[in-house]
Length: 184
Image (cartoon, rainbow, N blue to C red; front, side, top):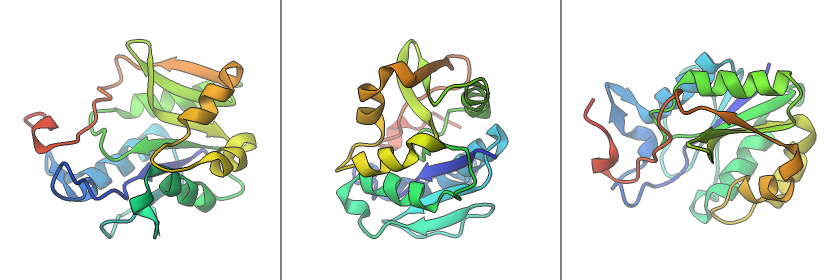
């Protein structure tokens, strides 16, 4: 099975509290993100926490003690927690609650069809979620720094990246401030 990683460690400074704990349509964003990955076909799902701790049903939770350094350290902690038998991993962000499981399903289908790295696109622009094949996990982890995820690695290997159109599989808009959440 393809594993899933939900990055949910940030403090949500602009939001005023950790976004993982924010509720939208009666569900915490962290639970919504786990559901996205599970319903999309990922198992196990690893949730990387940091600024806030939470019990998360149906997921393996790991703590990033260096969460304040940015997304890079959180992704590294998540990649280290992926079981070695997983052939790949889908990475999603807790602050994109409008992406639907179909996006994850499409990334997994692209991987099963031979993609080594797959990226969801919306309106032709690469966004999250992202699928990283097993052969690239160690290199991606070694390349991470600061508040940047896998994007620089993907840009250095454009010939290996499969873009997967997901325009009709949700909205990739980030929730950075309370007003960014649509009325639910």
